[in-house]
Amino acid sequence: MKYVAWLWRGTSGFRVNIAIRVLLGTGRVALGLLMIWLSKRFIDETIRTGSSDDVVRMILLLVATVVGVIILRLVYYYMTNAATVKKSNALRLFYFETLFRRQLFDGHELHSGDVTSRLSKDIENISNSEMDTIPQMAVTCIQLVGAFMLMRWFDARLAWALLLITPVMVVIGKLISRRLRKMTLAIRESESQIQMQVQEGVEFNAVLRSLESENWVTKHLNLKQDKLEHEVLRRTRFTAVARFAIGSAFGLGYLLAFVWGGLGLRDGTITFGVMTSFLQLVGQIQHPILTLLGMVPQLVHSTASIDRLEELEAGCGNRERVPDVVLDGPLGVSLENVRFAYANGDHEIVADFSHDFKPASKTAIMGETGKGKTTLFRLLLGFVEPASGKMQIYSGRKVSQDDVHGKNVAITEATRPNFVYVPQGNTLMNGSIRDNLLLANPEASESEMKNALHVACADFVLDLVGGIDFELGERARGLSEGQAQRIAIARGLLRPGNILLFDEISSSLDEGTETELYKRLFASFPEKTMIFVTHRTAVCAICDETIRL
Image (cartoon, rainbow, N blue to C red; front, top):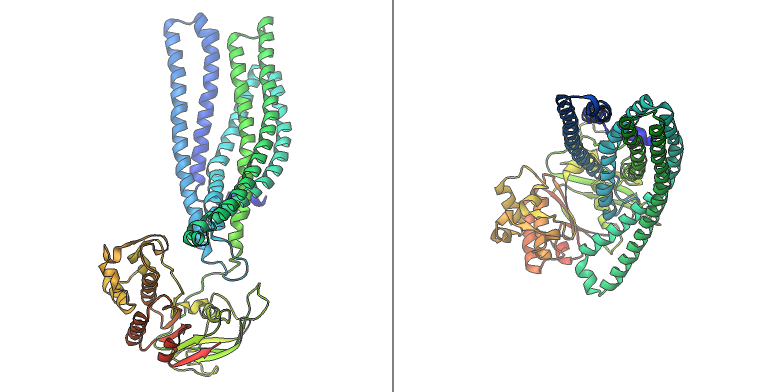
C-alpha cells in the first residue's frame, strides 16, 4: 500500500489528463470491438444477402472505425508524452531542491554520481509508471472486460474457459514481481557505481593520467560493467522463462478457440463470421492479460526507484527553511567553549574553542591540516551544529544576555545571509562568467560586477573574448587555477553579508597578486569583519590578529 499511496499522490495535478486519456482509450477499445462486430455482420449478412450499397456502406463503416482508432491513438500518444515530460521535470526539480535541504556532513552523504543516476533513471522510471503504465493498465482492463463480454455474447463457455487462466496468471505475476524487485534494486545499485566511476574519471582525467593509472581504472570499470551485465542477463533470463510459460498458456488458449470454432463450423453451430470474431476476440482477451503482466516489471522497477528517491528525502527530516535573520552595520562573532565532532569521527575536531571576532576586525587562522579550520567555517555558516557551547553574531557591540535591547543573535542556518563564504580552490560552474557572478547576487548590475572583479584582481576578465560573458568550460576549463580563484572571490564579494569568510583564497596566486588582492580587500571593505584561513605568514602579518589551532 505504501507504493500505491506514493504513486497516487504523484498523479496530483495530472489526474484530469489521465482521466481524459482513459476515456480516449475506452473509446479506442469500443471502436475496436465495434469493428469485430461489424466484421461478423459483413461476412455473415452483408456479403451474402446485402446489396452493393450495403457493401459500400459497411466498408465505409469499417474504414471509419479504423480511422477513429488511429486518431484516438495519436491523441492518447501526444497527451501521454506531454504528461510524462512534465512529470519528469516536476520530480527532478523537487528532488534537486531537496538536495539543498539535506543535512550536510552528517555521515550520510551520497556520491554525486549516485545522485545523478537517481535524478535521471529513477525519475524516468517513476514518471513512466505514473503517466503511462498506470493509465494504460486501466485502459487494458477495460479492453479485457469488453472483449470478454462480447465473447460471452457469442459463446459463454469459450469466454469463461479463456478467462479461467487469469487468476493463475495473477498469482504467477505476483511471484515474478517479488523476484524482479530484488533484481532491479541490484541493477540500479550497479548502475550507480558505474556512474560514479565514469564521473570521477572525467573529473580527474588529468590526475589519473599523471598517475598512469588509466589501465587500472579502466579495468576496474570493466569489472563493474561485467557485474552489471551479469545482473541484467540474470533478470532477462528470469523474465524470458516467465514469459515463455505465460506465452505457452496463451498459445494453448488461442489453439482452444481455433479448434472450438472449427468444430462449431463442422457441426453448423456457428458461422464463418462468428469464427472470425472468435479468433479476433481471443487476441482481445489474451493481449490485455499479456500486456498487464508485461507492465508488472515496470511497476516493480518504479517501486525500487521510489525507495531510492526517498533516501534523498530522508536526509531532510522535518527541516524547513527558517526566516532569515539579518543584522545591520559592522558585525562581530562571539564563540564560547564550542565543541564539535563529525558523526563518523573518533575525536573532536573543535574542542572548547572560544574567541571574539570584533566588528570590522581582520583575523587570520592558522593550523595544521585536520585541526578544524574549515569546520569552524561550517559551524559559522550553520551547515553543522556544535555539540555544546555558544555561537553568536552581534551588531556594533557585544551585549549581555539580559540586555533586551541588544543585537546578539545565536548562529543558525537563519543567520547565514550575514556571511560571505569563499571556499578554497576552483568552485566555478559551467556557463558564462556573468552566470557565475550572478549566483551570489542575481540583481547585481554590470558596474557592481566589474567593481567586484577589480577588487578581486580579476580585471583580466574584461580582456577575454566576450568579457563577462566569456563561456567557461567544466571546472573553468580555459582559465588557470589562479584566475578561477579570483573570479570566485569576486563572486563572493557580490554577496551583501558583513562577515567575510575566506578559505585559502590566495593559495594559487603569486606573491605580487596576493599582496594587491589583500590591499584592495582591506581598502574596499574596511567596515566588514574578515576571517582568513591561511597557511601564509604574509597574510597573518597584515591582519589585526592571528589564531593558531
